[in-house]
Amino acid sequence: MGLGWVKGQGMSVGERWPTVDPYLPREVVLSFLRHGRLQVLGMIPWGSNATFLAQAEGEGLAGLVIYKPRAGETPLWDFPHGTLCLREYAAYLISEVLGWSLVPPTVLREGPHGFGVVQLFIPADPDETYFTLREQFADQFRRVAAFDLITNNADRKAGHVLRDARDHIWAIDHGITFHAEPKLRTVIWDFAGEPIPETILERIEVLADALRPHTELVRQLATLLTTEEIIALRKRVRHLLETRVFPQPGPGRVVPWPLV
Image (cartoon, rainbow, N blue to C red):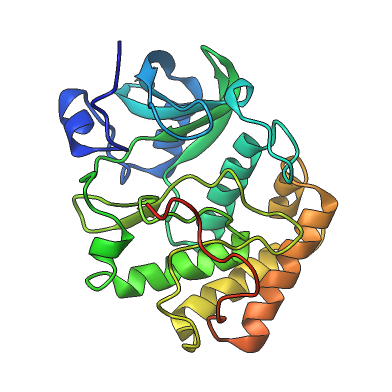
């Protein structure tokens, strides 16, 4: 079925098929994502990697998911081939430790086109972007900005954020993250030079503790990222806790293209 009418993770799609409430108990949603039977509805027709809208059914639930198979990843010169889905899942793990629920529930699993990442679909207005939402939800976007600094996000486009029906901001598309070298490219520079709020720093402290050697988080990350990338992640977290300020942009390219 062609999905040329789909625009991002839009309301129109969520109204056409059932969706699963992301505020259900997390383990219930994750079990649904891990074990639900996947039926691909069509390919989302933009982006450089194969991204499918699919319906999952099982564990007493049925609803839409986003499925990104490893086999559909376009090779990049600066990221090892076949690792983008792993980085998507690593971003989810970091989001969960921070306690911000920025990344929609996400799992790694087999699907109709092979192993990849499956993420809960979040219904949202496809015409809303960071540029239209930033003034109303500045506090939430400060968390997104901190998250992107931590994960070294090389592709925070304005359309990679979603506002749900509860006015919660979700962040999506984290395939090119966690590089050991500085790669931050984002449209969210409005907070540059500002002190990082204490409430955000408190959660980053929790993450720093969870990144100590031999923790459960580090054990999981070791299956997803290289040793050098985990060391660089620790350094970025420590740097934020030491400086306690959102950095200024630069040097080099600091925004993605296209911006949206």
